[in-house]
Image (cartoon, rainbow, N blue to C red; front, side):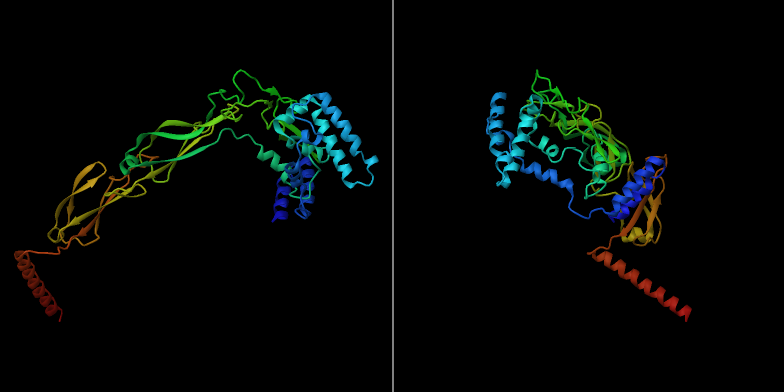
Amino acid sequence: MARAAASRLAAAVMSSPTRELFARHLAAAAATAWTGPSRLFEPATRRMNARDYYDVLGVSKDASAPDIKKAYYALAKKFHPDTNKDDADAEKKFQEVNRAYEVLKDDDKREIYDQLGPEAFERHASGGDPAGQDFPQGNPFGDIFGDIFDNAYRGGQDVKVSVELSFMEAVQGCRKTITYEADTFCGTCNGSGVPPGTVPKTCKTCKGSGVIFMQKGIFTVECTCSICNGSGKIVKNFCKTCKGEQVVKGKMSVKLDIMAGIDDNDTMKVFGKGGADVERNKPGDLYVTIKVREDPIFRREGNHVHVDSVLSISQAVLGGTVSVPTLTGNVTVKVRQGTQPGEKVVLRGKGIKARKSSMFGNQYVHFNIRIPTEVTQRQRELIEEFDKEECTDRERVAAASG
């Protein structure tokens, strides 16, 4: 599957000389895709095992630059490989001391380290270029396409809620006030993420752009800056309310005009009423799923409506009229003589209005016949007399057919 997917990707981009070269590079990578342990996971392992740089040098977090330098020289001399040729761990410790000092001796790097910890630097310590090698032996497309698509700007988070309607509210349309929880700008810092009265510093790694350019073999890929997480700013102290997130969960409400004829499980989209966007460009959207309660009288099937009407034996036999409920009130419906159980009549145009036209569905009236469980003496006599008449009729029919 991996090789097939890679081949399809290769074929899809072959529309120019540059893309053709791209396709050949991808196709070659596909031939050896997923054949060994991936270097993509190595930096994460190193980051999890990274020691605190202050602990490495044996100094406190508020140590002065001279104290850091003094500690470094002492440890570098202690673990230098030339004086520890029989100690296999000395070189590793020497490298660790050097790595810590390279960061803590630089005021800008130290400020970043104090904010983000060793994870911000361990990846670069693993082998120079933070972009890694051309195509690691893991997923050959993860580095290229993952950085492009995973870091695509998405704006605020979408919010999904549901609202319950009665049958008639759904049929006729209504206005509902929807209250829900979503990301809102922090009231303490006004969405800046820093304490009131302070301003974050511009990230020197990406120069405030929030992105860096990394070389992936023959390609240059734009990626989110890992130092400032794409914000373009370095924050030393975070707002205590939102912890630097700029947003907090808050209550929001919107008045929603629900169109007539909406159905169960339909979803309405309200643009820009989702979570706040920390970039203040593209708030998320609100998705409202409609839930319609069952009605004791009406049943819906598309734009058609179904109701039941119960007839007595005499109504079914003799015919007549009955009052039937519709969406706009009761109407009189004619019952034909000799109506059978399950028989139905159609009331054209008495259903639900189609949402995209002026047409209405129909209403179907289903007749059921009620059989009495108890009868009076007079009713019994009449039914028995009726039965005798039926027997006589059957005998006449039999004689005529014989």
